[in-house]
Length: 226
Ligand SMILES: Nc1nc2c(ncn2[C@@H]2O[C@H](COP(=O)(O)OP(=O)(O)OP(=O)(O)O)[C@@H](O)[C@H]2O)c(=O)[nH]1
Ligand SMILES: [Mg+2]
Image 1 (cartoon, rainbow, N blue to C red):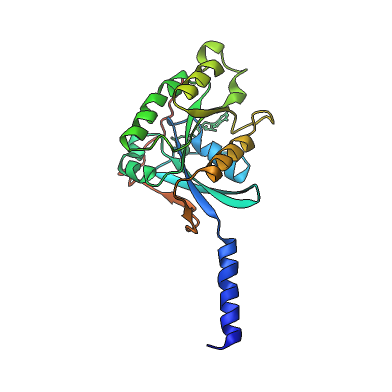
Image 2 (image 1 turned 45 degrees about the vertical axis):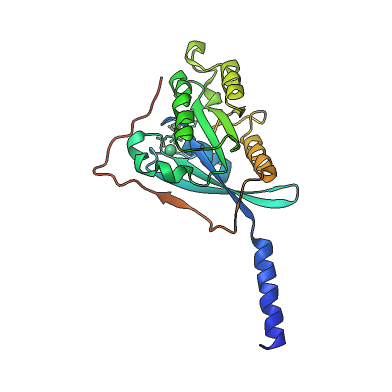
């Protein structure tokens, strides 16, 4: 081979190596209507979607970030909360997961009480205890608007997080105050994963779009609510 050609092709592979970054699969689970889609939009695009529909199957979103000089990518799997839209995909959700975000709605105690079932689903799909878990109470902007009897206290959530070895955050995908910013979540997940020693997917293809469960007929949205 021509030596100049050889040199330029090896330069090409070096630059492609440099542009690769470790990609981590982050599963986002929780009851329907807690705001997983809005939250992942906020984490990845920095905005609150004007309108959402119940997720069918899974939607993929990516967020690139830099931690201590290393560029990494979080590949967020925004899963369907409704059983009928997720059941055939559950095993795919859990394959090669690097972290899990458990989301509930702070103004909907039912969604908090439902967390046990999500922890159980993780167990049934052999999610190891070494996989970092994060508990996120969403819709904190509604705390002042709803009565305290219909809210999940931070103390209760912190106890749950402690029992299940989760890192706890409360935030709002709609109106994140600086104090409860979603960037803190991104940084915490990224920092934890960067340190983590699990095998990583390097150079994995960029995911975007969605993977739908086949629907027989269009069904109306069903939000769990208080
Ligand atoms: N006030 C407020 N509303 C929110 C917030 N996040 C989501 N919502 C609203 O909650 C509803 C459900 O949000 P989604 O993100 O679609 O819920 P989901 O968890 O993805 O639901 P599934 O896809 O069915 O599992 C929508 O009407 C959102 O506008 C928030 O932080 N504050
Ligand atoms: Mg959704």
